[in-house]
Structures are given as structure tokens and as C-alpha cells.
Length: 433
Ligand code: S3P
Image (cartoon, rainbow, N blue to C red; front, side):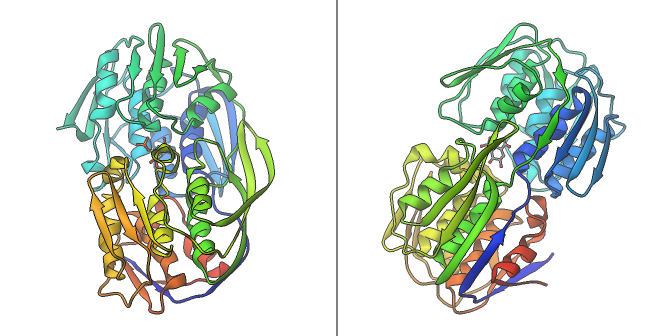
């Protein structure tokens, strides 16, 4: 088990390009595999999560070549997957297991989806329930992985009201809908990331989107195309916070995905007073990109508007570090989902902040953080093997006069394999030991 030692640093500078978007990388493999023809992907995230999806589709007979971040997928068509010989191991990846269960529930063959210790604790009832309503047969360990899917079922389209604002559940149901008899509609309680809908459309599949409802009709085909994966705003967020809190910073993050269903972190940091400007906005392959310049700023605590929660769901560990450096109190509510991510991100962040002397109060669905000065750590920060916890506390080193030790950082590889390299290039002082 590796750990980070993040030593004090004050300055951050340079033009940085963070790796490809994780959500889009997963979907490029899944939908490229189900397309007719060859899909070429560039900017693919070479992180363990996206690679778990890639290996799973290879195990189902799809020929996929990878050279660095360029991936070539020889699509097998919507009905061309083959029964894998072994259970599909999806490692740490919630996106892989939830989206793939939608596809696999509709196949002729049986299969089993497994994952690591963290994934094996995560709730799957949220996908099992709608899929069962569509006619799927899925056995689980009391609503948790492993998932045993019995093939050969005929699925029927449903009208599904998402009980939680979850892009994974929405995508799972829509992907099952590709195979279902009739129309499948999903209604979401709040906007969630829409990469599945965008990519389906890019591959020639008709998806009807009206307000908060997405519908498609089963039985169509997908046609291969080129996919350029933009930089992941969730990875960029660590550097947005880093530059905002650093005593001296001026950085530019290049080619970041600014899909409006993902930009909650920008809105939140701007509300806190961050000096953050977007330029060079452009559209590539149905996704919006921009360069984002961030300079040091004096942040102020805020009550985070609940409508930003699904739009920044993965960025809260980093936002909590910003809140710790802000003047006054920051309050987050309506974010219960954080408790069922790769770790319980409310409790695990609260514990780490306490270790750094930051006063906080844990709420059932959020947290209150009193901005202050990071103190000499009273111990080692435990990441609970959660990549985003590890990276968030690394960023805190820009405002701490003592080294911060973070345990269990191996899973940084799931989403941001060159994090340490990039952090050091920008001016941080991080060692992995
Ligand atoms: C994701 C959706 C989000 C997010 C996850 C990736 C996706 O999960 O937290 O990292 O790619 O669809 P939920 O849908 O559970 O909110």
C-alpha cells in the first residue's frame, strides 16, 4: 500500500493538460464495441477504471487495440458480444458495473460481474430494480456485487423515474433500452451528466430529450465514428482548487470538458470568490471544451446551492479543501450520495480535515466546514483507498506548513495516473513512498 508525502509548497504555475474524461472513456469503449465498424478514440483515459471496461469488452470478444491514449475498437454490432469465459472483474469502477449491467442484462449469455473490496460494498439495487422491471434476471449479494446476470431474457421498455439523480442509473436503463421492446424513458429529478445521450446521438442513435426526460426505442443500430475524449473536469478540479488556495498561483488547464452537466465545481468556486476564467471555448464531437485559467484568490465560505450538487458530485472532496481555506463557514446539504461513492466521502473527508485541525460538523447529507489554517497534522490521513480523497489532501499542502502524509493512494491510478508528475511539474512537492 503506497502513501503520499505532500510537503509544503507555495507557488503553482504553467499550462497543464490533465488526462481524458473518465465517464466519456468508459462510454467510448462500451458504445464503440456495440457499433458497426471501427471506432477510433483519442485522448482515452489510461486509468485503471477505464481499462477495466476495456478488458471486459475484450473478454467478450471485441478486438480492441491501444497505443497510449489512442484506442481502436473493432465494433461487433449491438448483438455481437460473446459470453466471457470468466467473471468480468471491474476493479474499483462503479461506472463500469452499473452501465454494463444494462447492456449485459439483455444478452443471450449468462455472466457475472465482480469488483474490488470497495466496489463490493456499493449499492446496486438502484440498477437491479429498474432492470428487473424491464424483465432482467439479476442475482446479487443483498443488493451489492457480485452481480449474476441470467441471459436470454426479453426486455420491455419502461418509464422510469430515477429515485436519485444518478447518471449511472440513467445510462444503465437507457443502454438496456437499446435492446428492449418499445420505448424506454428515464426521468431525472435533477440534471445529471449526459455523456451517454450525447454519444448515442453521435453514433447515429435517436434519443429524444425533453426537459428532464430522455427516451429511446430499442432495436436500432450504432454506427462507428471518431471520438476525441476531452480532459476530465473532475481531474482538473484538483488543480482549480490548488491554484485558488495557493499563495502564488497562475495556471491554465487546457482543453477541459465544460459540458454544462459537469461544471458545478466552476460555479461553486466562483461563488466562493475564485479567480477563474474560461477562454477558447469550442465544441468537439458533441462535447464542449475550454481552457481554464485560475489564479490565487481569497475565498469566502458559502452555502452551496443544492442544484449544484449533481453537477459537482465528484468534486466535493476538493471543494472541501477550498472551504477549509475560505473565510467563514461553508455548508453543504442535499449530498447524501457522497456517502456511497468509492468511500463515504463526507465522513472520510471530515476525519482528514480534523487531522489537519479544521473544525467541521458532519451532517447526514452534507457537512459544515469552518475555514481556518491547516495545523500540524495529528496523524496520517486515511484515504480509505479513495482516489479523490488522496488527491484532495495532497492539494492541501499548498496551505500547510508541515508535510501531510496520506495513506492508501494506490487508487489514484483509477482516474489520474500522472497526478504526482503533473502536481510536481506545476510546483507542488509530492513524493509517493
Ligand atoms: C458517473 C456518474 C456519477 C459519478 C461517477 C461517474 C458516470 O455517479 O459519481 O464518478 O460516468 O455516469 P452517479 O451516477 O452514481 O452519481
